[in-house]
Length: 303
Ligand code: NAP
Image 1 (cartoon, rainbow, N blue to C red):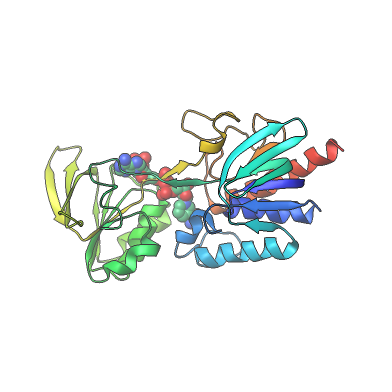
Image 2: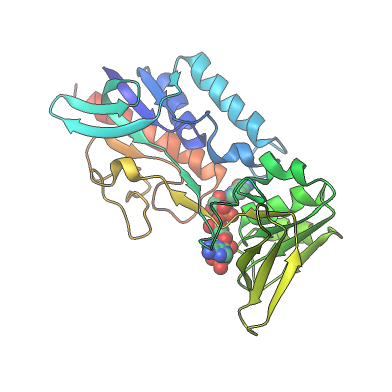
């Protein structure tokens, strides 16, 4: 019997693990992918208080080593189900079953798709969801980034470092991304902003050779020759395994307030998968702490 089983080894999950083990609780972290979550795809993190600049990977590696050296167990196992039983909570992974007194849901999300024709077929053949992972394949070439959030603007800046030209295509005339990032992107000579526009079609046969774009204000259609398209249109919360268990809101996020308590006693939620206004690294870490403390109090109260 574990005290706390955490599903997801991103910033929220690993922060929860640090707080869980430091409270003396037997803590297990399960993740079907390599630990790290979304932040491993961010080249440079410059907005985590106290750390001027760090790569996303180094940041999360620090969290991982801190959690495991303190005594948290980590297993690279995909969780496929969670059942609330009379004597605890059963967590079912592809490799086995674990019993827990409490569970912290920290699954984050996966990249949203654009939803246009041939997107899936061309993924890996010019369509990518990770500039940090795939950007180097497009050295010296022209590429497009789709989206107007922090990820898209961040991606455009990263790609401008080795691509010939980067088109940043956003469906509105203002960005959701932080102003400091937008200003940095504007200072790059090889980033061109294409506003009020959406991609309507991928061009090319077995790989991307261009895109067709529509200006949604004027209705004008035009095409661009690009070898790569980086889609950064947000994150889909990963709630499949719990949608019958805890309350989910209309946008797919797990309902919980700042206490990180879900609608099921003993099950807590942390990070981007929770209903919240601000999804940042620092709020993910904060959620991890709050959820682990709440789990600890729940365990201690039931002893
Ligand atoms: P996001 O903030 O949700 O932004 C998604 C962007 O994609 C929005 O600009 C949205 O347009 C656009 N979009 C959505 N669906 C679209 C579609 N079908 N076609 C065209 N455009 C579409 O997502 P994100 O940038 O991935 O960021 C996710 C979270 O992580 C955010 O909270 C962000 O702040 C955070 N993040 C933080 C850091 C950091 O702290 N360093 C780095 C990266 C990300 P609209 O604006 O019109 O809705």
